Length: 425
Image (tube, rainbow, N blue to C red; front, side, top):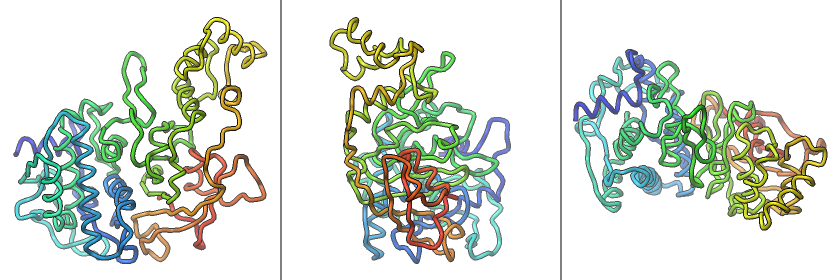
């Protein structure tokens, strides 16, 4: 498995021509998938970096169980890991699952040090700690059994990395490289230790694409891959509020009301129990999504020459020449040559009720102890108010969490049950 080990390590850690990552950065990733002692359904993250694996595992675990007993923890974690592996296999050309371990189920040459308790640091690097065993299973039932049998391995010192390597080999290294936009960039930044968007997308959707928009886009003759189907769990990012990117509807409106929230350096989780938040896409939401595919710059308008294509994509055209011409005149009365999104939606989809309640309970998770009140990893509970307009009478805070959520609900207000708002970092 030696050459395969090197390929996995290079894909995760190494830029061409570089010496890989430092031992201190790699040490931040050598932790297990362990639950908080104070919040028994929340995974704990010791240092910055591995949130790119821990947060996607957390979003699945959150919906699998609510019990506090150790057996339920074991069942929930193992079920989650199996689900992610199954998804990785179903989106690739492979027909088997790979489970990676070290000999005797433990990292070689490591100390018992954990970042939270102090002690000697390991000087190991990814090249030193290459996995030595790979189990191949060919059925879902066998996969679930094997994942359960490796429960202590996932909890152990290198559990996060072993699971990551398992997903990569299950998906297939070649398949991942074919999906990544820039194959010279590793899945983990070798300078800062943050997981890439490709890594997050791989664990959330099964596809290691580098972008968060819907579908593929052409840019200077290059095809840039995005998300092609509604995800089970969602993704929102503070970067969109800063206009660095635009998350598409497939990630913004997932099948379950739970979202990974991305800041500049960290991933946390926001979730609710109201399934109506993720009801099937309404006609107006579909229209907004289709309109925005013709507006990749997110300007809020399209050239009037594209109106016919948008209307055809939404089955709104019965008599192209007459009707499209009439709509152009109505939607662009000043003859500016553009069609704005808001008047377009109002014309074809007036007064559509979203079905979202005015208020509902919400929860926020951050796996880093230092980012939690009293350094206790616990869910922060609150109430969300979703208004159809900005109301200064109910304006709450202006925190990164709120700005991130406003990319999906522009007029959301948050009332948290704690003295301070939860942290996005």
